[in-house]
Length: 97
Image (cartoon, rainbow, N blue to C red; front, top):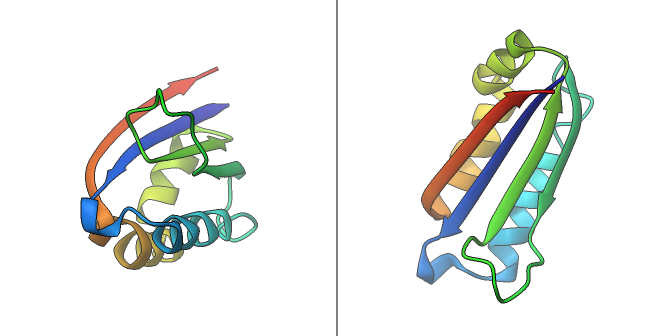
């Protein structure tokens, strides 16, 4: 299995519950649409010790499935409409387990 984890910091003017809900709903809605996507969860609730605003945790069957996800039209649409316009920074780690 391949784990794909992203942390985003939102642009200050967009750091609100509506934006977070849009990211969560959009990304979690990809389950069942993209082959090889086993699990996807977006975390928007956090402790005050956190230094990121939103986390994506996703699991794929293979590296090829992760590559397919990155370019899949449904994912690109969510990323372009619900994520990228609102985020200031992005950190990512991918690994096999």
